[in-house]
Every structure is written in C-alpha cells, then in structure tokens.
Image 1 (cartoon, protein in one colour):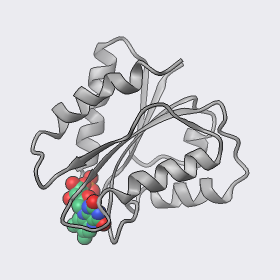
Image 2 (cartoon, rainbow, N blue to C red):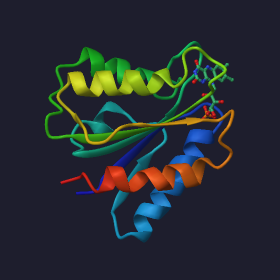
Image 3 (tube, helix red, strand yellow):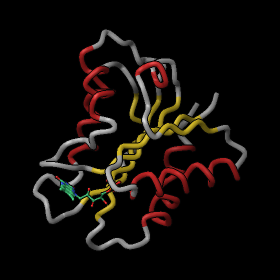
Image 4 (cartoon, rainbow, N blue to C red):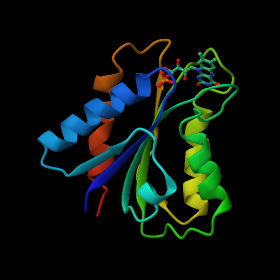
Length: 146
Ligand SMILES: Cc1cc2nc3c(=O)[nH]c(=O)nc-3n(C[C@H](O)[C@H](O)[C@H](O)COP(=O)(O)O)c2cc1C
C-alpha cells in the first residue's frame, strides 16, 4: 500500500519538507502519493498517512488543510485501518508552538486512526535544516508501518 503524504502550508516551507520526504521514500522503493490540497476523498481510504503541516494564526492549521480536518472531525469516518505520523513546522516564538500537530493527532485519533510514532515538531527559530531533521525522523515512522 502506498504512503499518502498531505501538506498544510502557507508559504511553502512544509511543502518543501514533504517534497523532500517524498523523494527519500521513493528512493527507498516506497510508493508515495503526495497531495498539497488534499480532499476528503483523497484520504478517506488511506491506510498509511503522513501529515506534514505548519501552524498558523494562533495555533491553527493552515488554510489549505483546515477545511479537510473540519470535514473529518464532523464526519462519521472510520479510520481504524489508518496508521499515521505527523511532521510539524512551527515557531517557538508562539505560545501555540506546533499546535496544528496536536489538532491533527486529536482528530485522526478520534476517528480511530493509529499514531505510530511520536510526532516531529521542528522549531524554525533554531532549526535551519528542516529536511535533515525530517529525514532523521522518517525511519521511526516507516519502520512502524505494517
Ligand atoms: C502569521 C503567522 C502566524 C504563526 N502562528 C504560529 C503558531 O501559532 N504556532 C507556531 O508554532 N508557529 C506559528 N507560525 C510560524 C510558522 O508555522 C512557520 O513560519 C512555518 O515555517 C511556516 O511554514 P509554511 O510556510 O509551510 O506555512 C506563524 C507564522 C506566521 C507568519
């Protein structure tokens, strides 16, 4: 089964990280589907989901992914066959550092999906190599997928 990557991003930083992870996974022989503007139909039957998202506003999901998670939260979707991981980008200048990660974890878990490893929270204030940090985290996610 392919790994599905979806991104939440405003200025593209999270998209860059996701693009790089997609390339790494492909180089490892994985099949990957990446959606920068994922819809409900794109994700509802996925069994292996990687969410790469920044946090915006005051601890909110970016506008390109917020409607999807609102829709999931309000749905009767059964995600018990889904395994997922989350990579977050955020700034520790905000009290709401990487709150989007918590939101994603909460909504998917409530629908029965299983978080397979601790989420990664990249602090863009002090971390200038997001790609390497995400690549270092990636095996903790991939190795748990069944
Ligand atoms: C208006 C604004 C609001 C932000 N709010 C938060 C926040 O609440 N929590 C957080 O961790 N980071 C926050 N950030 C930092 C972004 O998450 C960070 O700059 C990230 O790299 C943006 O990635 P993107 O281009 O993929 O959206 C905010 C940035 C901006 C410009």
